[in-house]
Length: 301
Picture 1: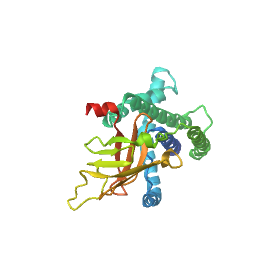
Picture 2 (picture 1 turned 90 degrees about the horizontal axis):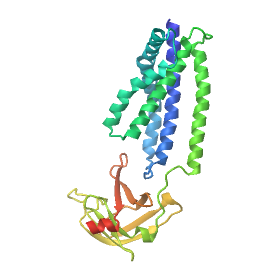
Picture 3 (picture 1 turned 180 degrees about the vertical axis):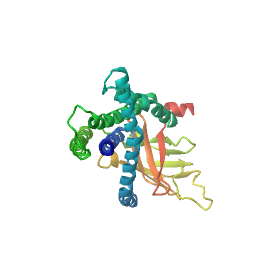
Picture 4 (picture 1 turned 45 degrees about the vertical axis):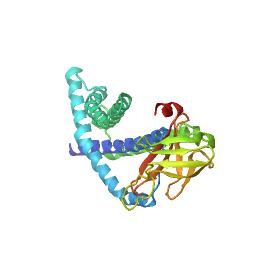
């Protein structure tokens, strides 16, 4: 009995690890398709992550063991009992049915907590159901009396082999998709498209005229003064647009009299372009965004 428990635990933890890797790859690819600015990379943060990697692995193993004992194994026990009770034999399809029913409440709670929309909530529920059901079905193979007996080590080997193939396949498909252009790119602007009024939505505006003049009013990206107030009331100056070598390297350089300002970068969509800078502590950047005001917005204001 103890050997069987250990075999099921090993198989369950192995599958959960593979699913975590595949989920991470899928999440990275999904993030690359979303409208977002380029992330600032901090060398100290990367080194810190490398140092923490062993501790993260231990924490992941502990979480995998906890999920195996508290979720996967009870799921197998209940699915086996329901199969014998209603079908007079164990039926594999009880596993996904119970997985779907069991993951629905936590998925709904998380969706409500993070205020995700119905599509995101449904996607999270389906992902949790699939991960739980696949893990339980693999571990269930060790409990079937009419199949050749497998040890935990043998099952671990099979999971490692097919899991590696699955990870490589998902990674390759994700890379091909990003190379084919499913990833997000900022809109290509021009000097004419940059000229206009940009607003932070909190009363701060940056006016860039076609003749190269700039006026910043209550923009919060300046150095703090003696009063520790980051808001500058009004600063005139000049600006220029640098197209760079690609969409990600576009910059809007604003030089203001007696005021310090960072170089703005571009993201958003072709219909709704945005300018942004990172402000605050380099270890925990805050994103400061300006949105282009169109004529309709200006007339309403």
